[in-house]
Image (tube, rainbow, N blue to C red; front, side, top):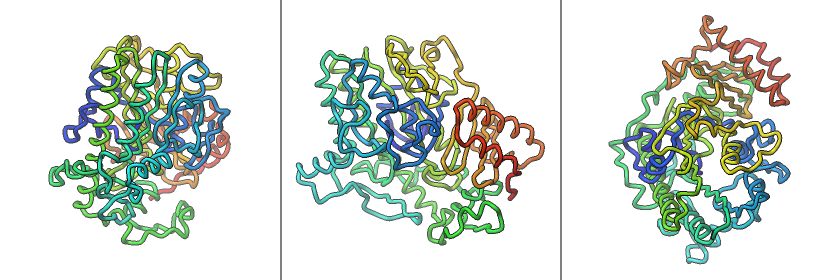
Length: 467
């Protein structure tokens, strides 16, 4: 798993610019999911949903910084109880990392203290994993790592993962390798920081979108306009957006620079992902090991003129890569348009291994899709963000209700407008579609016992703010 990696940043997903030969070969040996959506954002909530098969309003990790209780059944403790050797290597982000958590007890290597201790052992204790170079107006660090590749964080984590595989023996194992990159700081080591020519970087076609007909938060981040007359503006009282931090003030050269570095960081991680795949091959484990690659969320990286992931349900953040390889079951080199959620990953893996799924898991196994017996999985996937956002993605539509505070809703025709440029929610002709999709969200909230159901129902009775 990586952190904050866009689905379209991988060659296998059609990107001709970024070089990801190892993820590409993983896809060539398995199946690529074209429409996998995370159930929630940002990091901690999405990771908790992936590991538990539960929606955020059920597992309770609705924002970063909340501890996932040990009592909640998860991938690690479920497989540990089933007799697997278990290891977690890398970013956890679900509570303290001082000791093993959630059944990952045979090897536990975190990206904080364990990595700092490693740097001290190799005589690099004066370094931090930061960026040298400019800082963009919103405080986004980018540049290159002062630490040589040989000792960078992702290199360290990959080697620890390889060491576990080499010691695994004949006992069934579950290894989670959680890279921090390409999350900020966008700082690849040399020579990866210069891998991509800035002049060849293609800027998003909607980079200069004027944000009309978009919710207030996006408009204010993008343009700096206060729009204090609206009801939704009360949420942001006291929050200022100085001109120097308005995203509209970023130059195209700055965007090209950070995008090129982001691509370099992804290619660097891909190299070390390859080392782990090579180890499976050399140990004779590849033919009987399920390998799954995904990420916790994406990054806007210039689409709609935005950066990062907080508070948006656009595909650049919520639609993530998902690649699964398992030679005895999955036909190599396949792709599927089946609509799946990352809450479905846990029950799918457990069913593949013949391990009982805990009662109460809200995800649904998509094993029939992997077996080639089904072409579809869900007719809708649901998303939520703690900033008062609930959303649904169906075969054709994506509808987002901005309900706390009541703000402009968003409706996109994902067949005709995959870039989500034309918000149709403000068109009275689409009121029926919005109402039907809002009812689907209400039904989902009721089925999953969402404690915000009543508040959401009352809030959405109010008409959304008009721009």
